Image 1 (spheres, helix red, strand yellow):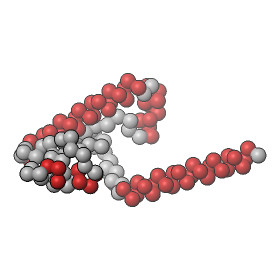
Image 2 (cartoon, rainbow, N blue to C red; image 1 turned 60 degrees about the vertical axis):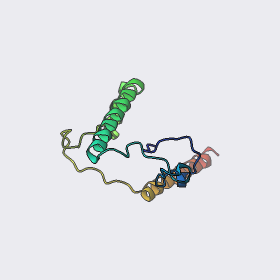
Image 3 (cartoon, rainbow, N blue to C red; image 1 turned 135 degrees about the vertical axis):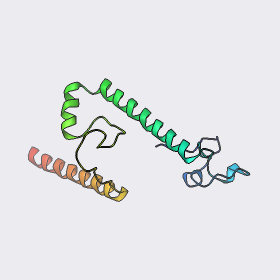
Image 4 (cartoon, rainbow, N blue to C red; image 1 turned 120 degrees about the vertical axis):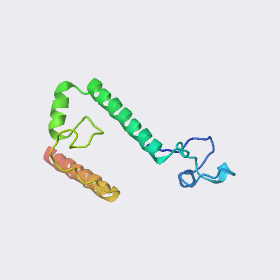
Length: 128
């Protein structure tokens, strides 16, 4: 997980950690944000730089650890490598996929788990 909050060594539960920072009594408030004194332009530039670093790190990891044949197979099904460029900037002529909400993602994972359990049950019955 990425967080703009700095670890100041004060023990906080998650609810308090993300509360508003209290400069007078830091132990009563949340953790201070790292970029709290920057302008919106500076914060946007920092976010862009962070995304670029993540893109390079992720893609270097894919190149190093995913065999080339697997990379070719993966690229047919989904993009193993990532790019911070828009689809248009990449020369890809399609609509961006709709973002999944947390509840949609959870439902998809529950369905996949149920499908796996059903397949295991079928396989165990066939084994008899």
